Length: 204
Image: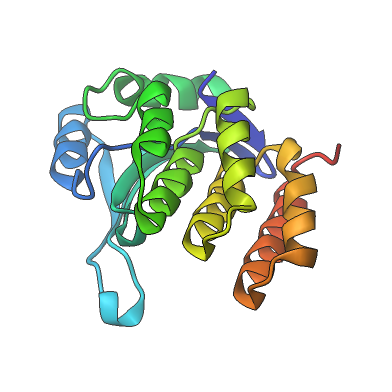
């Protein structure tokens, strides 16, 4: 399953690319499919603004591409006010794309990373590209990371939980929001919980 219902419509899972820069690849797919460009925002690092591109497939169905420098990756996703089938059909090309990371590759990246910064980035990336339904492999690694000794690992894991949007993460996020020794990370966890409430992530 690659689509989830959210308030106001449906969205695909995020298809995470193996590299930071995959804009040319996505643009080529959009051009071949005849999608209409409705946003082309260049990156402005000094203003904290990422590269952002958006296409209209047809009325009510859009595809978004962006790059996340902090974790050295990029992703694409589709959203629609119409229905799940439209979204699923639109992203089928990305589900099979050779440059999109598989779930096994995302997990492997978490296990292979050794330094705290790279481990944190891998954990965040895994949550960003996680499946729609909770997967125990991701849960195990993100929960362990959220309570690691190193702040960089904890931060990556908390972002990964926020990106995954799984109800199972409410409990560890609550714990981190109350008890993490770093004030900034307590705020990250609390912010993730607030986002869960806004988008309707169920309580367990």
